Image (cartoon, rainbow, N blue to C red; front, side, top):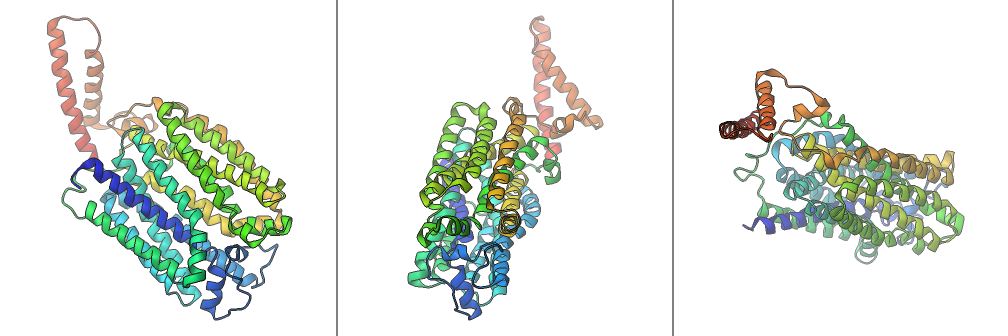
Length: 491
């Protein structure tokens, strides 16, 4: 564990497991929640047959009311949305805290809360407890997800290693989301409703213990050399970061809105069976991983085209969303869903490293707040999905929902041209002189600017030996003064 390279690989493993667990817990209740919901209410009733499609039946929009009644349908919709809603509220605070205390302690705290949430799910006895467990998961995710991604960006500061590491994390997110429903359904069917959650809780506990062994949050010097990050409200008004955040939210809307609506549409329009509904999203895992791999390889060869990969991904998402209503059988539906996941992989894998680069060159290289903004973008889509998607289908129709989502992605894709010149930006020692092109403020900044101008003059060709010696001396003084100014600004 003393080897820095090996340590950062193990930390990447810790973060990937944390993201995997979070997304498995988010989706593991999809196939089991109807019977689980009936059991904790003591109802039984028409809870379903235990197959994976039963979970989607309880999320049907009001246009196709479920057998259990509209009130229970609303309760389950709120239950699914509560995680993203609380995560959306907590992320601004978690990002600021991560910037102040470092990455390891918030990551460990997030894992602890996720362990508590998972255990609560296993032993929940009423709706209020289920709601509390789901909300606790949102609280833990706000710290674990943001701190984990920020830790990867911090430990993998160089390219293309950073893009590869973030791509690996994204692949774990995809695998967790798509593998959780069959995982939960099988264990629930053959071992009981508590077993899926207890298995996830044990893995979460082991992941936290590994983090403690690798990077104890209370170790001396863990925060000593970390500069003070740019406040999150200033990052939000950065136009480049705002464009990336908008793209992340827009590209995830089709996935978030189709999850609670496509199952019922498939049954009504093509008479899909329960196993077809349960396996709808599983094939999409493979194009998602392929998209991550392709984007990482392209970014390593052509790093100046990150914006283009994101725009291409949004165009693919838009076209695929428009094709969904035209499908007439299960095998046809798989094609546009795979296109959506492939496009999301392109956008996420291209733009998440771009956020870290923007912070490096325009602000201070501390990543908690900027990845809290990215998490907020995801949460906007997934908080609205279970609540809003059904109402749109009810009032306008499933076809109009998909056409609207597709049009939004196609129209947003050209906006990413704004990021075309990002790769040409040069890092600055002072965020004050970059953001909004502000001039120097105060005597100290004025002296610093004059010294930087002196560096430019000293690099001009010509001049005698005495002048060159003087310029060399001035360069030495400039380097010392810039180091002092960094200490001054970051303290």
